[in-house]
Image 1: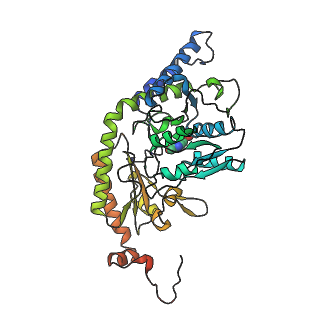
Image 2 (image 1 turned 30 degrees about the vertical axis):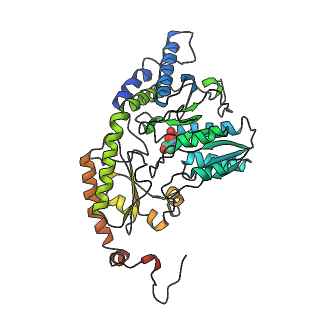
Image 3 (image 1 turned 45 degrees about the vertical axis):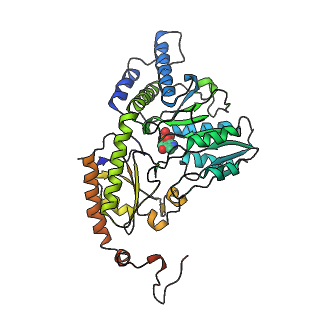
Length: 406
Ligand SMILES: *Cc1c(COP(=O)(O)O)cnc(C)c1O
């Protein structure tokens, strides 16, 4: 038996309806959508344009032409940031973001910094939410872009994107949001929320891997990052991934249709999991915002238990932890670090990413498993015994050979 899948922030399986929509474009309908002198090409072209419309519909774009297909959200994020940076401002200018963005944003921003751009990280609170007043104060005459995610993939915290959009537009600044985790989970409307660019990934919403899109509001100018033939209005060259794009379109249509039913269902599962963990396991803390979070995200630190050991013990459920084994060391999550979770607790953190396949039974099974193993692993922890007795471990005097490590 395979483990119960509960890592839907990392990726999702292809929905059977999405696969069904894709199949003809992997077999009979193989034309190149740029070769419209014959029926093969025209069939492919019309499938791509249908998908463009389905995506525009999901995010409330006014025109399908505002959707640019890419190889995924990593490319979409790169195109958005470098595209703005190297078009109108010719390699100079000021960008504002936050420290808990996906690496596709952070690594891009850091490279741009080396190339001469100025970058500011707007402060966030302990739940990960951006401080809007502080954000406003960071804006400068040469600010060319604000990029802030719609939802965080580790702690699920939602950002006030409509407010950020309003601030950006009042000052004439382009606003980009990485909405990968949010689409299909919360309602997003690029016009209502004043969004100029928005990144999308198919495989995070029950579509195939290796395809995504960037919404680019009409009038926003970008420097292309991949050249060669001028596809996608010159924003992104390369023969289109027709089957992938059809899958992305079908996934978008499904996400829109299921938003009203699936998001509340997930929210119920999420709150059941949170409630049960808090009722059954002492010294466990919820990371992220209690209510203002993705309907499918739960993230807990279980003090006195090594996250990796807990993952191993709970291997009947596919989960991910708040630390990553690198070749040399065990590094704790930069997201947890940025919201002020101490290293000792970050290493005890587990992310639960709920999805379509998960049920109430899964939640109850998982909680039983956690109970059993957290209790067992804590039996080996002298620190846990002390904490239970009410000893303040952080300020405890460890005898005469101790030294203060702060
Ligand atoms: C997964 C993810 C990405 C990267 O998307 P790919 O399509 O896998 O390149 C970007 N941003 C966020 C928030 C993600 O979760």
